Image 1 (tube, helix red, strand yellow):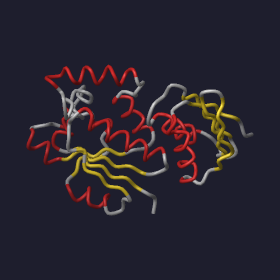
Image 2 (cartoon, helix red, strand yellow):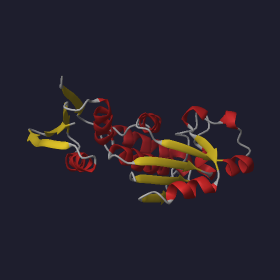
Image 3 (tube, chains in turn purple, cyan):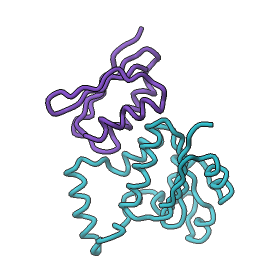
Length: 74
Length: 139
């Protein structure tokens, strides 16, 4: 059964949001959804680049107050 | 062919080690394979307990500059080199140690953190890896 996996990268700096996203992708099973939150501005652009490079599904990129939330389908 | 990044880490400077590990871990995170070749002063950083002991490449000021830099990095919540090495290994990165450097600088295998080293090798291994890499850097 697919599940939602939350990855909290609030306050983290380069390259931690990318690295923690990758670790979560490695642990996830096909069909799982990752929900990554953070406030490192460059990562909001770069996590989608990594998603594209790894042929995964970018479900959404949202700004919420002073942070962002990215959803990825594995 | 899978994309690969190959890094030569010749410098043992604190800030350059950061450059190397940030590029390495970023590459792994974006789905690439990564090999890091530690040679000369870089190899000193793989001795037990020496990873973050290098000076700053500029404005070290007998270590005062480095203390200031570490304070600034802590404020910016930058991950420690030790944690970056953990991340690197966890994401499947490979570390190679230059055996000629070991001869020249008198470094023994048991002086090094063998648990993080994939292999001890010479230039041929580097060339083999580099020729199949999209990105190669000398740091």
